[in-house]
Image (cartoon, rainbow, N blue to C red; front, side):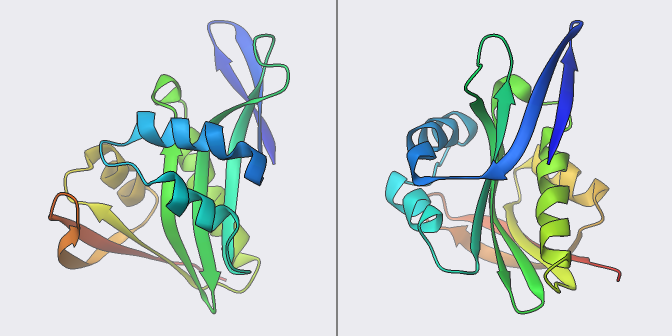
Length: 166
């Protein structure tokens, strides 16, 4: 999947494509910029080199400055049975507000739907207002609360679900 990002009269091409082990350094760097409590390199790598149900896609920007492509977002998710489970979705802070998060979310949702998924599930920090706004606008509903879900901060997480129509 590819699309154009427009900014200040400069068009840039973005491609959503499978991540590769060779992308790990860029993914780790982005993870560290995007999150206060980032996943470790080992955890990110375990998903990249994970099970058959584990998928990692990156949003790669191609422009004059980055002719080989620069990773500006990613989406880690599982497709298990009839569910998509969102594990980690991030957009480089320099590219917030351009619709990339929604594009990555929609990509993973459609990917799962094509493989028989009937719903999408995720956990999100109760304090993550931008993510909550995105998920709610995309049709997710809160179905539960996991108390102290995030071990490093003891923060609660909302469990959210979106039903997929056939």
